[in-house]
Every structure is written in structure tokens, then in C-alpha cells.
Image (cartoon, rainbow over all chains, first blue to last red; front, side):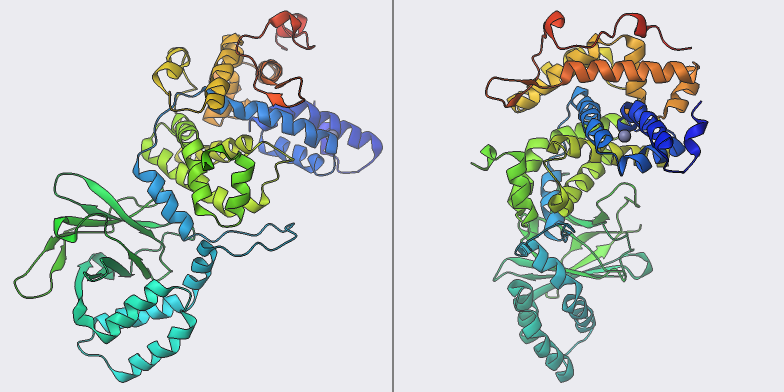
Length: 284
Length: 216
Ligand SMILES: [Zn+2]
């Protein structure tokens, strides 16, 4: 049974047969229960049969109501914040059929901005953080970037301020294996932290990293979410979830379980008398 | 106030880059997505990942959602289910077959006063409909939907003929569709199916009789 369908001609008889085959298999198709070859046959027919398309929509509605039969669990409370962060840095795709181009939203602007001068800037900053003094050339390059960066005032102001007055920031670093590194710049004047990373493992296009603060009582709080480029670089400005002096440990880890989910960077905060505090990375 | 917006309205805002609209949608359906993913994967961390992916996907693809083609919740649960099954296949782990009898009976009470009334009603209706299926029919659709098994895999798993699986699946789906299809109300708007349908007076479809003894 079913062999006759394999023929590809579009004769009336054949498409009748194909219609019959698809029609009968739509419930199983909606449940995702067809074999690969059957599924392809159904899909080939669906492309030009509006009758079957309509029927399928009804079966799909039925199939996916099964979702409501499961026992309900509350998602972990931090997930809401993770999702909020993730969408803030995720570009939206525009539907091919869209007639009017919607005004790009803040998230979009940020996302497209992040793809260009931002990465160059991160590179500069990473360089700069390794330097003792500022050199003029770097300063000039920064100035040319200013114009391009007008969209993201906060990031710009942090960077410009850091260039002009690095001593206004506390600077922490956290080092991991294989050159993974994170810098945290804290400005008490604005209560803003700037995280700059380098060399974090590439997780793929869609994956994001999460930064967690531990408060010493066993609680960890999501501080921010960020996405790196292929060299593991990222820059993000955020407000610390609780006062920095209460942070006992920080962790940077992928937000996904299917990619390596263990911490990439993890360390304790140590403050040294009279010198900048540093995060000392623990063994990983 | 955003609570009052329909799913479709929220999607329009989301398509324009409104992050708050997405969070509102998450507040409305995060639990459903998370619970479905957990049911499939039996792992809280993976369920979390799926939930994050699903809402990112909604964010990214909101402009391509067409409310004329399907209900938003159908779209949402299908993304969730497919994503979870993908991971399940990759891991080649089989979770439970579906919500067990005990869970069907207790879940709604133990779960959610926090669920919206429509959601609550929908859950009651689906559980009631599943209870009305003969156990062997119900088992077949649960293996497909929650475990991602194809008809052939189900036949092997249960050690029964493929034709039997196909028949059971078809009968189960027909019955569910019948029980769960929205009944048009007087104002022409769809309303959720009643929880205790009067069996004799509902539509056509004789399906318990001759057709119920399975093929092969
Ligand atoms: Zn057709």
C-alpha cells in the first residue's frame, strides 16, 4: 500500500491519490508522527492544496491542545529577566510579506549597532585596559567613533569617561582558561557596571551568556545577559542588582543547557588595601 | 492594562520591537511553555532553555505570524513541542509517555490559581477529553506528541502492528477534535468547549461503533 504515491507526475489521477494520501495522514502529520518520506510527500502536496492546508490547521489546533494536559510547573523566577535581556539584544527578522517597514525599535537599533563600531570599540577597550597610560592615537580613534556611537549614549559615556578619567572607575578582572577574560568597570558616581569580555568560547549565533552575582548567602542573582562575537568579545553596561561590596563571587556561564553549561568564568572578589580590587578566578 | 490586550495585539506590539509586550506574553504563557517542555524532557534546565528559545523565537518571528492561519497558542505550543522534541531526539532520551492518570486528576488543583480563566478552562477541557479516550488510543497520541515517536516507532515500542497504531491514532485525533472544537456561540464568536459536553447532542461523527475495532 502507498507505493503508488511515489510517482511524481502531476496527472489528475496522481494528484487525487496524493490528495487522498495527504488527507488521511494529516492527523498523524499534525502530531509529528509520520516517517520522513511520508512527511515529505504530505508537505509536497500541501504546498498546492488549500483544502488540505485548511484541514491541517484544524488538526494542528487539536494536536497542540494536548499541551494543556500537562501538569503545570512554575518556571524559575530568573527566567523572566533572562528573556527580557535576551530580547533586548536579539534582532528581529522582518517578514518577507511585510508591506510597511515598522520603525526599528530600540532593541533593533541596539542590536544592529552592536554589530559594528561596538566590536571595534570593545577591541580598543580591551587594548586600553592592558595599557598603563593612554596614548594619543587611541584617543583620536575614540573620537572618530563618537559620531557613530550617538545611538547608545550610555555606552559612549562610559567609554568616553573612562578615557578621560580612568581613576573614576574601579577595575576588576577575572581570568579563566584559554585566555577567557572579563573586565568589570564600576563607576560609583553613576552606579553603573561595564562588563567587557574577551576570549569567551563561541556558543553559536543565538546563544547568550549570563552573568551572576553571588551574595554570600547561597543566593545568586542574575546581573545581566550578553552576547559575544566569535572572538568572545562583548561589552554591556548595567546596574548591579545589589551593592557591589556585597558581591562575594561572580560567575559567567552560557544560558543554555545544550551548550557547555558549566561556568566559563568563576571567581571570588578580593579587595586589596589601597590597590584596585581584583577578582581571582578559581580553578575550572 | 497590558493584561487586557489580546495575544494578537501583543504580537503586533512585539513585531514593532516592544519588549514589554513580550514580557506580558511571557507572563501569560511562560508557565504553559515551560511545563510542556518539562513534560517532554523531564529536565528543568532543558525546559528553561526551551522556554528561553521559544520566547526569543516569538520575538524574532512575530512579524511572520499570521493570525488568519492559526491561533497564537497553536503556534506557540507547536514551536515549544518541536523544539523540545528536537532536543529529546538529539539526546535519545525517552521521558514519560505523557501525563499519567494521577497527574491528570490532580494537576489542575495543585497547579494554578494563577492561570487565567480561559487557560484554566482549556486545561480542564483537554484533560477531560483525554480521559474520554480509550487508554490504548490515548497512549498512542501521547507517545507521538510528548515523546516524538513516529507511528512506526510506536508500533515497535508497543509491539503491535503499524496498521493498529495508525487506526488508533486517527480515531483518537478524530475524537479529540470533536470534543475540543469550539462551539460557535450566538454572537458568532468562538467560545471554549464546555467541560462536560452533552455527548448525544454534539455534532456528527459516529466513531465508537464499527470503526473502533482497529485495523489489522
Ligand atoms: Zn489535498
